[in-house]
Length: 162
Length: 123
Image 1 (tube, rainbow over the protein chains, first blue to last red):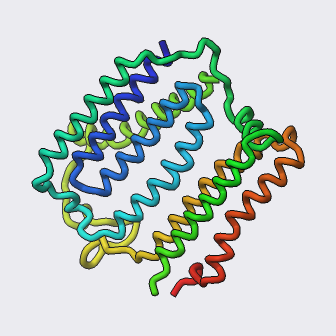
Image 2 (image 1 turned 120 degrees about the horizontal axis):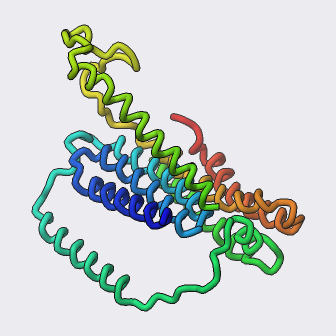
């Protein structure tokens, strides 16, 4: 009962915030509603017993991605004027509606396999054992570090102006 | 365990209600004519949180700030790996310590490179 209520509150907040991102004319406010959307998605993860994923969502999306987006907005001119409508309004709406329809169709028509086991909580400790113990996913972890290194090098290349 | 997150949800509700009432109270008081309303330019001026800007408030920021945001993002993702390891530090032992040291070293190479290329200096 409480879980269902939490889910529906979160779902309404997510959809409202996502619509705000699209419809708000001021790009800065759109970015702030995007942050609200991220927070609500983290809440959704918690209702699904994925607490580590929720922490990651808060840490990366609310903490870092939103900073990136807001910084990018601060580098643009004419922020309050925002995103003026153009001729692609109708095609964009049609494509978005088709994608939404396909997603709703797949989600409702697929026979999802549901595990009978109770979810592991909290998830952080099993994840740590899987990632860092001998026989765990050590190599993928190091490869992820290489990926991070590539990201940093890319940032350096972008930031260095001749 | 979900109940403890329910407390956080309750906290959010309290925050929302509190901040909304703080905004609504003066409006209601004015509506009930308890608070007189005689606005003038001095009362309406910004008297805290900085000066009124000359020209546009929304200026274009320097592009170089974006680099720091990108580096912050990379560090943030590194923290995701360090966090479960730190939670389970005692049980995982020395092997995981080496794993994490290699992980941090690989990311640190990027910072050495940035230092070497003098990207971290503000020009």
